[in-house]
Amino acid sequence: MSSITMKRILVTGAFGQIGSELTMALRRKYGNDNVVAVGHKTKPSEALLKSGPSGFVDVTKRDNVEESVKKHDIDTIYHMAAILSATGEKNPQLAWDVNMNGLYNILEIAREQKMVRVFWPSSIAAFGPETPRENTPQETILRPRTVYGVAKVAGELLCDYYFRRFELDVRGVRYPGIISSETPPGGGTTDYAVAIFYEAIKHKKYTCFVREDTVLPMMYMPDCIKATMDLMEADLSKLKHHADYNLSAMSFSAGELAAEIKRHIPEFTCEYKPDFRQAIADSWPRSIDDSASRKEWGWRPTYNLSMMTKDMLEKLSKRYSEGRL
Ligand code: AKB
Image (cartoon, rainbow, N blue to C red; front, side, top):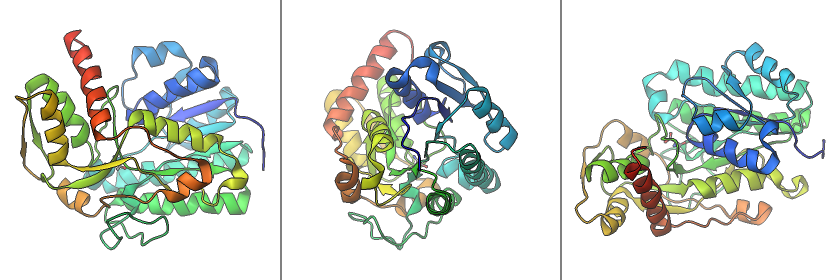
């Protein structure tokens, strides 16, 4: 297994919620020209387009990915392209194609090209209603009810297989819901925890699509980026897991989030009209035991609910006052 340091990085799904901020962070760390941002549907920001190489890649088309890998002499991939849980339930066939065949293409290309390392995110969606919901253990029942979750479990196993069978150094975490101010998420069950901030700033009210008492594990983007980059830099000999690390920062109910926002914007109101996403949220854990990540690669989150809320509101208010929201 190679121990060469990463130098030529491809980020798929680079124009999405996590990909866009991850690309910029990787460019700051490894150099603008060494990080190639590729996406499919979402429109990239000017900052992303101007700061380094970018292109169009459909991860379900192996030739497409291969062309980009060869053109840019890629040795490391952050494979962030995905269809999220709620969109997945509307189009399970597309979700399977993008999430499973996309991952298979990446792993095969990485194996053939003898790449240094691959990052692929799993999610709390890998868990299901039979999983213990409080302090969900690292090793536990994985029987998800969404096609997104099924692809996450299959993906975790496939990554593990590539590690053992082909010595491909593939790493990943089970992301909780990610909250961020730069690029909005699209099609996830946890999207309410981002949308609520935009609506609080713009309209002082929000209609939430899960119940007030719905508790889910969440994380602020700076912690998400830190976790992703730290795991990729970790010493392989210390890692007992590969693409399935539990990861946690905070857990709160939709009502607690609304109350925290109200502390800063007293006129803010939130009503609750649960839709089909409620059943998905109800099948996921309320809190996560991430002791394996803490022990094996030193994971420690920085942001809690109040720090994250303050920072989100400051960032979005500034953009709103500049007419950029
Ligand atoms: C979703 O809600 O689908 C994602 C996730 C938790 O993986 N944010």
